[in-house]
Image (cartoon, rainbow, N blue to C red):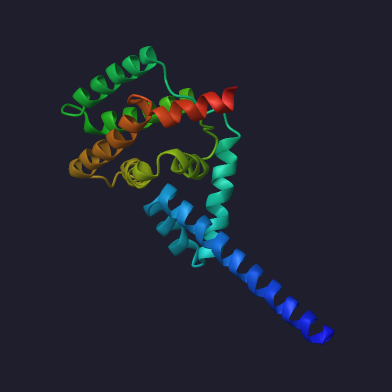
Length: 189
């Protein structure tokens, strides 16, 4: 009788542990899908393994949580907004120069906000944590920028890059979302 109770207890513990593992994994997956959106799908496709992709995305979250990413002040937002308007107006006469300037301005804004600028791939991974919806646009715009550097971009390509960069720029410079301000204050203090 004691052996049977022991077996039943062990089986019950295994079943409870399996259910807890399954529940935790599904909550984690749902969190990452909601947080990263299309970036979640892209990383899963890139790695070919959902568990590996989720580990990478969690690592990104942990890495960015340790950074001192901050919202821009209203004065900084205004200054960068004026700089963007100058870049955008330059596009008509000098599309190539405008795209180069837009790329540089995006880098300046990211740096001012606290994102590390050392490696482009890492920069995109970092930005995907707080701005996953425009991360793909940043990749596309940068790819056109690189195409331009090789002398292979058309004016229409450059226009597309400006639109892509504008999306990211608006996310980075636009009014800080309340959740972003609260997170910055929590990290700072």
